[in-house]
Length: 219
Image 1 (cartoon, one colour):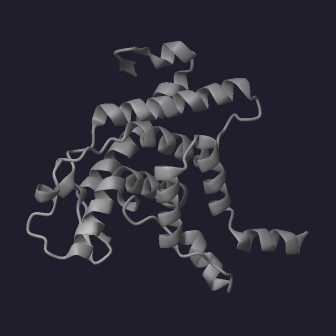
Image 2: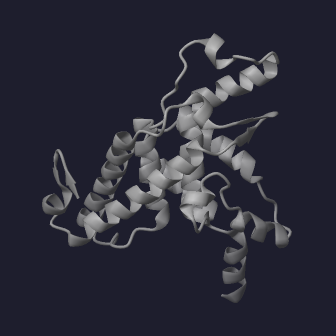
């Protein structure tokens, strides 16, 4: 991939790297556009990022994905046991760097413009909170879609709950997906320090207890 600050394929001498980074770039950009154009139910209202944000910034998405894949490439180079990383590693590193880049930028900088035509104070609060967290909501949806979904572009606004359904069908105690999403958004806003913590969370989330029980019984 030819970019202004160098050629990643040449830098890492890895013929597969350029194709890998292009595939993730295409997926993340498509997911961002889908998220931008979708009306999302938040509280008692539906909000579209298109109403409050400019289009997702392609330059910032490019930089975030490149930084994430560069990190993973270095891990693969220096840790011989990590040759084929799980999707959780890609999801966590891409999510982390997107949280730093913040590709969605708000259109409004005054309350009056943001709340135009709104009289309900609770709805105003919901819309304002969505503005504050729009990047983190997108990133949380993206990461969950990456580890649970099959079609990133379409799953990003309705992250699959495949594992949760399996738990429910086996009468296991489950945490609702909305609660998981809320906790992940909160962590991205206030607690995120690096991709490793996100990776551990996603691995734990995708480690379905039903399968672990079956493996234990079979042993």
